[in-house]
Length: 104
Image (cartoon, rainbow, N blue to C red; front, side, top):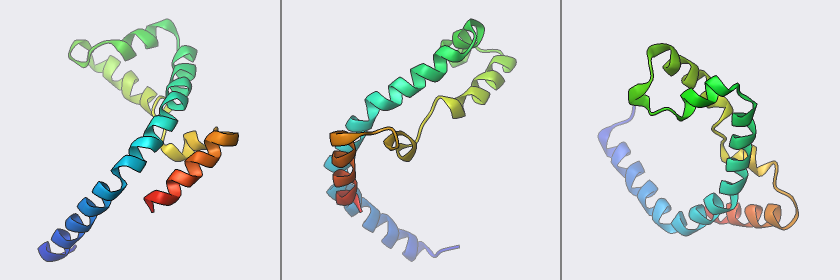
């Protein structure tokens, strides 16, 4: 457990870091977004039509079983940056690595 003072210092440092790296983080997100969408579509298309339908159904209309199925599918439809970055090649990979160096 940390003290309120330590938490306050951390939050202040994090806010400064976020402001300084905002542009770079946005560029990274823009670079990875098409790859993430392609991976998501690839996995989504592998599901049976019934599962695809419940995944696009608004949450307010899902029954408990549909919610369970949707939650079970989420790990296969949401990708972190590191996973997606492994699929980058050539110039995209070099740009990603250069941008990543500016975030640290």
